Image (cartoon, rainbow, N blue to C red; front, side, top):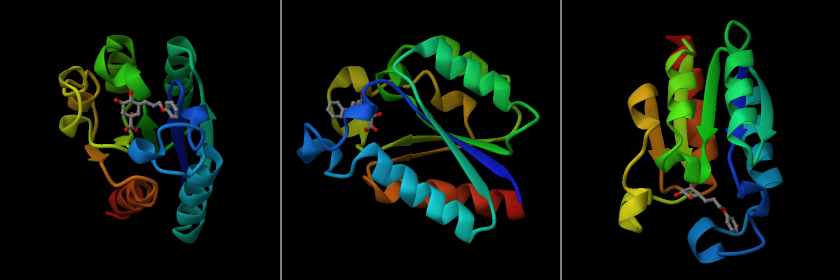
Length: 145
Ligand code: CA2
């Protein structure tokens, strides 16, 4: 059994309240429930942290080193400019997935660049709430290899 850390970046605590046409109607609690159920079905534990603060997300990535087998992170808008999160992920040796509800490449040009993608194992984007299940399945498959 491994521990998977799910990290949610800024404003994701507002999910379900605004912009359902972009992000769907699920709340963050709904997404965490999907991820947790999938992890448990695959024999793993899942911890979740949401923060609107870059440093708190970096601290959580550091604390996962040697303790969590994988990190699934939706960095929110930090994806596009927070190099310090990319650096923290680069220093983490486990499986890493960058996850987005929407497909940033199909949106405004400033969302097309990710400073995180080059540091992760893989990226899942554009599948809405279903992406949270896909991300945990991908982690579990990789851990089983
Ligand atoms: O598609 C995603 O998951 C994003 O990471 C979501 C971020 C956005 O900046 C990225 O480009 C793509 C934004 C999350 C903010 O979510 C809100 C939810 C409800 C109301 C307002 C914002």
